[in-house]
Amino acid sequence: MHKNFKGIEKTVFGRGSYAQLVSIVDERRHENDHFALFLVDNYFKGKNLTIPAKPEDIVTYMDVDPEEPTTVQVDGLRDQVKASKGIPSAVIGIGGGSIMDLAKAVSLMFTNEGSSQKYQGLNLIKKPGVYHIGVPTISGTGAEVSMTAVLTGPEKKLGLKCEWTVFNQVVLDPDLIASVPRDKWFYTGMDTYIHCIESRDGILNNAYSTAFGEQALALCREIYLGDKSGQTPENNEKLMVASLMGGLSLTYSEVGIVHALSYGLSKILGTKHCYANCVAFQHLGDYYPEGVAEFNEMIRKHQITLPKGLAKEWSEDTITAMAQVAIRLEHMWNHAIGTDWKSKVSLDTVKDLFRRL
Ligand code: NAD
Ligand code: ZN
Image (cartoon, rainbow, N blue to C red):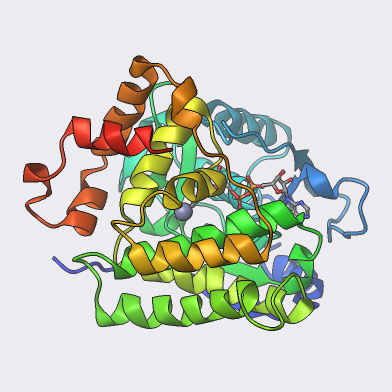
């Protein structure tokens, strides 16, 4: 079966395009109970970012925590808003992957009964959600384009994954990412770079995923290695586009060993997604030789220091637990190593990979 995915319905791109959010939201105001729900990263509280809310709207500033968004948080927010005002005309997420995933999930839970916990998985959602709009303020994860909203539940950390999860609209204003601190700019941007390398270096690579991936890689090289590298307005434009294209590349191909190890680190140790990818990637030169060599150049150029020797502090149980999480992501190993991956990769192989970190 070939992958058959829905894309974002509408995209506005360009510096200053955030000003159009007001009219984009206004167009939806006739729907449901005539108010908008804005979910905004707490970083912007008291900052110079105008939220285009009317008196009837709800604006909620949210902290970002490695373990969030959670199913409990999503259900609580939905119940609270429903009880006080009803069903919004639009849900707008202004922030990084965490806030955008929260917005996607809350939108779906206004129209699907019960707890979000029971919808964690593929195509379990029954009905389309409320119109939802993503406004990224940090770029790299591709959450603005993906068909999943990653949630931490009581039993598992797993996405609400279906075609209705995809945003109806995204607003890509590169000026919004200008304030991202340098270290987060690096790690989150490297998530895009790693998406493209993993998408390319595996059996599911195809002309469609490669076209997006190659373009995103070229942009990453300009942003992180070029003569004009760094956090400039021009590079912020490029990074927003790279993030989106990297997300599309992996959607039509797959991620690989870096993400498998990264999920182990996140699940067992609570390490943030993009940072965990960087921590793992530096040690995987035998699997991704060109990618790791170029990544190391970027590290040097931007004087980023990644930890080494972490595994010395980990118990055997911790390493086993992380390896178990990683090896269960069979689709990633299949893509990276090949259909016969089980004859080449055992739990011990994966434990040894963690021992490199
Ligand atoms: P994030 O949303 O976790 O935010 C990272 C930090 O950057 C926060 O402290 C935030 O306050 C800060 N920040 C955001 N914008 C800023 C700005 N303009 N200026 C200054 N600081 C700013 O970031 P992320 O790395 O984009 O997202 C990680 C999350 O995304 C994880 O929860 C992960 O599970 C999820 N994720 C989702 C997908 C998907 O496809 N849905 C893919 C990868 C990761
Ligand atoms: Zn990623």
